[in-house]
Length: 375
Image (tube, rainbow, N blue to C red):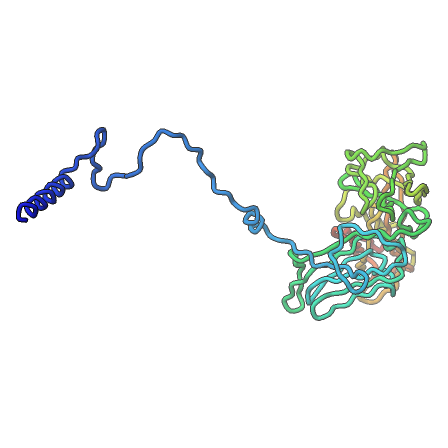
């Protein structure tokens, strides 16, 4: 019994010595403390670039939220497309979310205070309703939220909505014009527009010169067609003046627009170019005298005149007459001549002195003066 016990103890001691005395495998060295335990390798690994979600990049951009909805049948609402085609006579009803909404729509609806148009502001939305629509109502309808501080409001560009509506009407391929003949001024420093707009989205619209009769190509370089504006002259020049008209074709029918007289403008934009001239610089007592103030400017820019004269404080009676006319100044150039004439009857000593004329347009004003003496 003792022999077997001793034999068992010897076997246990031998096993413990084997465990304590193990050596590392061949071709391997023991790792130093703190040494990286990742096995080195020469395998080439393609670097992986972390993917970023498109949504993240989109979130970094400012969002423009469409706030417009169009009322459909049975009280349903849906966001309108960029363009809509409706039949004349249909009712257009648009809503825009917000407690203070601004609106824009074809100008004639506002100019003539058309009773067919209704714009109302409710607690949570603004509403535009147009009934008994016609081809003349074709155009852009848009809305925007307003950010107000007291009575001062500004447009919130992040909350807008718009749609261009074509109101198709039998026999009306063009948006009707209030006249049968219109004038378009060609300025060398800005675009000019021949405003023949179709009422049918699919209509083919071309531009034509009356004499010599020919089609004017809209090649996108000199002239392009914009369905929301008409034919746009990108860089007007004097060779393009003359009488033109548009032709529309749709559904097997065709129609010609009103005619447009294109006039080239030689006077640059700016404050009025003004001159003043008295009928005489020395006037005898009792004679009549006049002072002429003249402005040469852009044909479509109106001019207003103001006068200061010696007898004004004494309420001296004078006659002032303002007129204007278009003047063709060779090579087809056209300017607007605006004149104001002041007439003084029965010249008196109190009428002697400075006569001052101020001409004003949207771009500024110019003041000129001359003296008149009693001879």
